[in-house]
Amino acid sequence: MNKTDLVAKVADVVLSKNEARAAVECMLSSIGDALARGETVTLLGFGTFKVAQRKERRGRNPLTGEELRIPARNIPKFVPGKALKAQVR
Picture 1: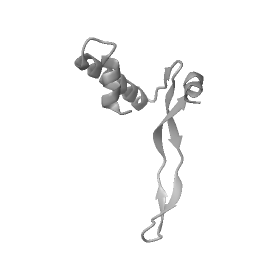
Picture 2 (picture 1 turned 90 degrees about the vertical axis):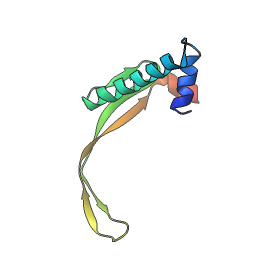
Picture 3 (picture 1 turned 180 degrees about the horizontal axis):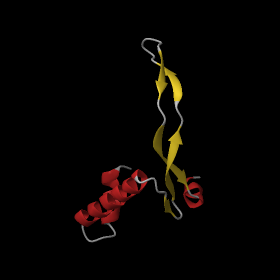
């Protein structure tokens, strides 16, 4: 399922596809904005979106074999909730 499919599913519940698209866009941008501020977003029954810190590490350029430093950075992380895990099984 992609974003267009999700909008179509939401459109079945609301009055129009434009309203559904606006709702999906608002939800996704709100989650992204919260993560950018370092906040955690918890959707009960679905899961939790949070920011995780990836440590600095050493890597290797596969083309030249040269060792290089990969800097630390923040990454988005999703942890599925119990209900979602049970639904997928």
